Length: 300
Image (cartoon, rainbow, N blue to C red; front, side, top):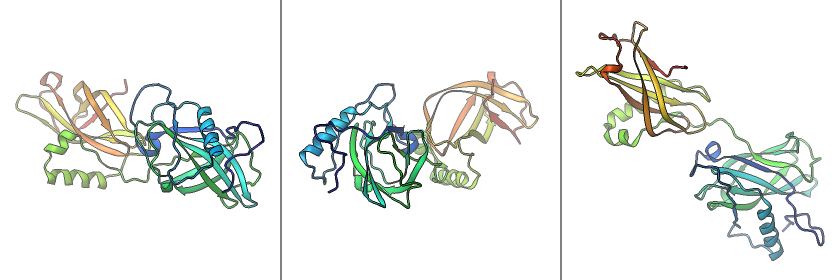
């Protein structure tokens, strides 16, 4: 097996590359905790690797040299960049997981950058072979770049960075139902909602908007407004307070109020239906024309 490190006699191993953390929500749509604590990651060697003792101790030493991560991060920490031959280079890095749960990676695109961020190479990898990376751990792995994957073969020995390339989700925009809706909604109604979400144009990337589904007054004079909250971003969004205005066909604001939402999350790239009830006191017009209406969150 080729060496993992540049070995100089009587010298301690050093991390030749930089750290490149990303949000686990952006890469995997996964998160497990909140807060600002610093998270140390424990060395995790792949079960199939049969390392020489000196390599194991070197990895152990280098892992201790890594900076702590923040909650909900994945990171690549560069260990070494060595030529295998004139046309092939091997990059060794720790794959680090700060989540409180194990993760597995599959198809990812990695980029190789120099110290000032200039792109040196790019390659798609299937990381299934890396296996399950335990919670709060660092797993060393190597990545081979051929001259076809590189924009130059003049590669720096230190200061470089291996990073995950984040890209807009290719997942289809889909329906996200709250547990209460999941259990109470009839199968046919659920299928109708799913079909509608698939049929309508999804929100633009990075956009969050509202789409009205139904508005009606009950016998007490309360106004029930059902909407789709549409999340076009690559992150889950949490709503705690939501001010809403409703306009009827006349264009007048006919109801307004603020709603407190408890543990209300709309997953990345999904639409979630919800019903907001405006008590009679919040309805400012006696006779409503709901043949056409819209609800929105005021900007001020």
